[in-house]
Length: 227
Image (cartoon, rainbow, N blue to C red; front, side):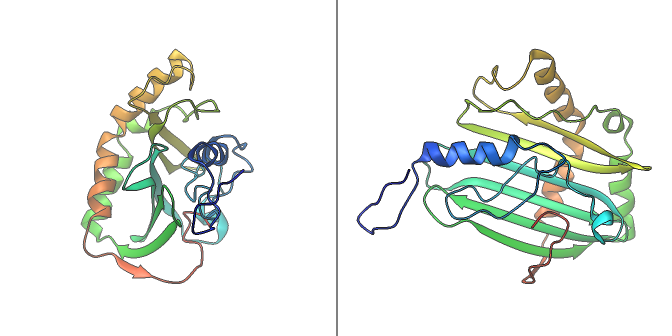
């Protein structure tokens, strides 16, 4: 159901936006989850955990990859800034990297911007060292929270890392609000442990995302972060 302000444009209440966002992000089975840029006000992202269960870039015809990592910050509270922020980065084995930045305002049209860059050999070695850290390799598979979520704000990070013939799915979910209904005590403890083990990788992701070498691209072809 939607409401119509004076402009006569149809907006969905925040609660409906949140419900659809949570459904898109967490309720699909991993083997069928897709990442799509949704229509305005039906959270574009953001499928934060949509990365789980997607075909790997190599199986989609892309070059072999080192890591694919996505981070999402979501708030269903009225705010002057972005309601939903989603960043996804794919780094291929040859150093080519793709970055997707998604933004959704509380009332407004969602945006998706794509960039490309390349890591040099020294940077690739540093990244491989991070990915091969024993604490990161030992992490169990990420478990998504139960839905419907009852928290108004949350943050999640998910990383895909090829490990031989398999792909490791590591990640965590966190909220500043009580999230006891999101998962069992054991799963919440796993998220906390994963956040600690992934700290260095997340910091690397933030630093490289802010690098000035990124060049914006306009083609609509999938970069491996989704459609």
